[in-house]
Image (tube, rainbow, N blue to C red; front, side, top):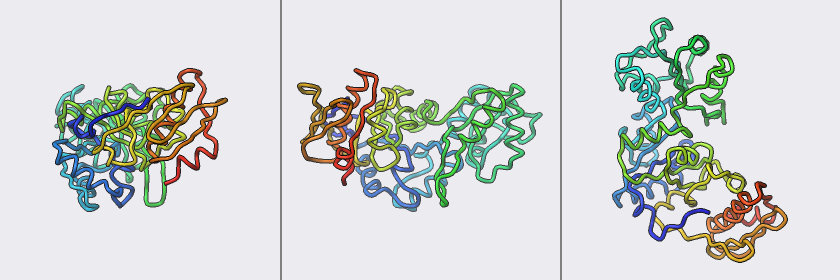
Length: 336
């Protein structure tokens, strides 16, 4: 089940690692209440890091965007998958190594910051790094794929299949990763979430003995926390919803659940298992009958989800079968 906390999370953890899109902002606007929650967490002595798989922008550009939408941030607070990839490369091949660059300015600046030498000359390179770059020419991707197929080591900043754009959701760097993998029959070493190098890099840069990963996606943020052995908080302001949660296997299950970043500032009630597999949180009770969730009670939306998730996970673990969410349950659980 989801874990309870009898004290606010800011009293339990000393580093909040925040995913960005869907957690801190949505597009060009801050998530309502996010700036205030972040400031309050800092006032409790919690370090805040902004952790992003987006490899296109250097930390200074990310911090500038955050500042413009009212979220206090400095470049040192931002950790990107490009930085995690550059760290991996430097540790393997050493400063001064020439690395074939197949990515945008964010990837290039991260390599330079680690004392590496980005190059577009295939014959010079000892390894390949790929990352998202909106102006990346096709021939660069082609050359990177040929180098990987020929046996050159390869690190990818991330493998996200989609990326938000002003025109809508588009293909992310994961599409390039999949293309190169299928062409070369070589699997990329990925630095970004859900792999752990990005979270390790965040702790290394920002510090913290008791870190908490905060995200909106089960398949990157929460799985990444699981892979790094960290606790996690899923907020309901972004991608993953109740339908995703109820069918989540253990590695995709968050430690805590909250409406938004205000969940850092409050305690988290227990979800209690009662007779006949009934799970109660707040004023809600959920259980599974013939593979479907039933729900009764009243109270907050997040307590409703906690009770439903408790019943669903118990059923999934006991039977191996995911539950169904009847429309009546969906309409209640998804109400504001």
